[in-house]
Length: 118
Image 1 (cartoon, rainbow, N blue to C red):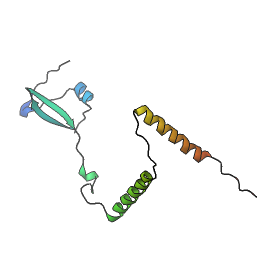
Image 2 (cartoon, helix red, strand yellow; image 1 turned 90 degrees about the vertical axis):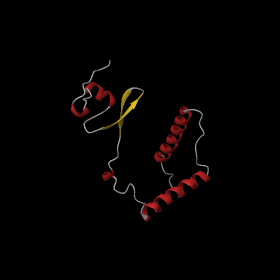
Image 3 (cartoon, rainbow, N blue to C red; image 1 turned 30 degrees about the horizontal axis):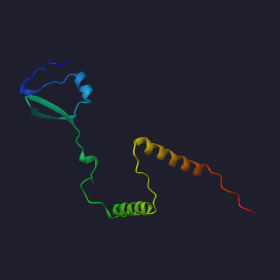
Image 4 (tube, rainbow, N blue to C red; image 1 turned 60 degrees about the vertical axis):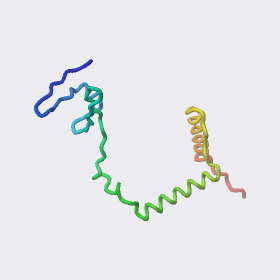
């Protein structure tokens, strides 16, 4: 149901609670405003607070690069050994494959060690 909103001094408008709630907007959130085909369109936007990620724009440290390279090397070795899954024709096929692999892992973890022969 359309809602009329009055434009206040300096062009300010209040978005009603019902509409803010549907859009998932809260105090302090940002919205992008554009004029399209005779309408003003407000779109919620997420902005990253860079202060929470101080090295987001910096290069990786040597230790970080070594760790990344090690993990990539291990992953490539797994692929070369054929330890891959798929391709799958449907999401259900992929889920079934994941369940089978999980069962294998669970069985290995719960398998009792063989007693040594005397």
